[in-house]
Length: 462
Image (cartoon, rainbow, N blue to C red; front, side):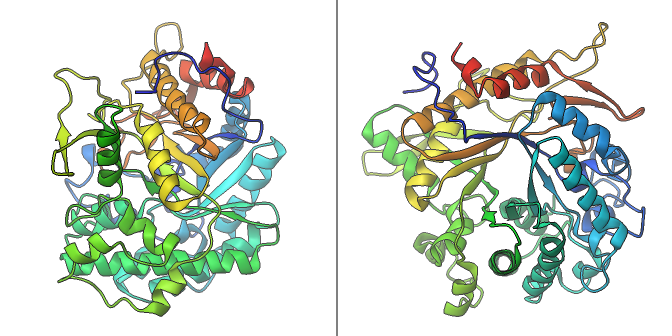
């Protein structure tokens, strides 16, 4: 395997490569009922007993809504070149449509100004799962009008922020907010829909994505750069043999099961204007109506493919041209999310996705949950995270060196936060948050990442 065997010969991270970190509104902002914010499906989901570990919720979270200036100062101290934030739809439009909540909109207006004053570029995600509860009561993603509701919301944000914001991502991980939220019931709104209904909700989210891109292109005051933030589900070849590599490519780019855990069902409509043939065959008895006009609306020009990659799985070729899964070795390393540590995923994922879609790659999320605490010396020592990041960034550097065009890397997450159904049990941040006092402490990984950014990745070669 051409990965991680030795330091990179030359630094593949060029001066125009963007180093950032990411977070999501519901996970950090808190202020869930402040300043006329509307309810989201997550506000309601967290009120249901047994849905979230510990009965946790996002009512306070990291209190970023009231501490954003200090948080941006910490981002600046780390040296971030960009911050991928998301906007809470019901904070800006409490009912999801109609009257704008000026206080909510002004929060993001001030946040963007604060980021820019610290030379941090805002990359704005318009939807990171906190869907307005009022619109959910009107059918949510099952209602075809959701595409127009999302377009109208997009216009409000673009008209306010696009004189300063250039980087836009309409939606984060539809595989999760549709799959976990509407098929498996593990995330808000907690539904377990039929396959037909799940596919319909996904179809409407693709329409919403396309209409959002149209609004951004039409109304942005600065030339926009628009991309995705899709789950990257990556198959890793067991060896570097051509057969195993082809098997991994097929596994990465195929629709294999009647669920949302694939790449192409969620990327092909918006990037190629068609649904993948194997998915159409697999789902043939459950498909929504798919019109040429819908596909045209979904298929809007994008500037980069954003991949959220945390892990991969290994496959090997079968003699008949198929593939089979290779089980991890006994005792193989895992994060506290119980996810395997597979740095090669940041080589093969960008490679296979770029080959299919011919777009530059941005890693819009990558990181690990670790068991972190403030030590007796007042510091947070997380060598596992540093080792994890060094391996994954090394693999991404190898992908870039092999010819894959790359726009940037966004570490997940800037700070510990509400980890959805896991509540506050999992810590992904490079800044430690004491949820009782809201005290922030830069972890060792934050100081290390500062060196990575300052050297433009050069320290990864040491």
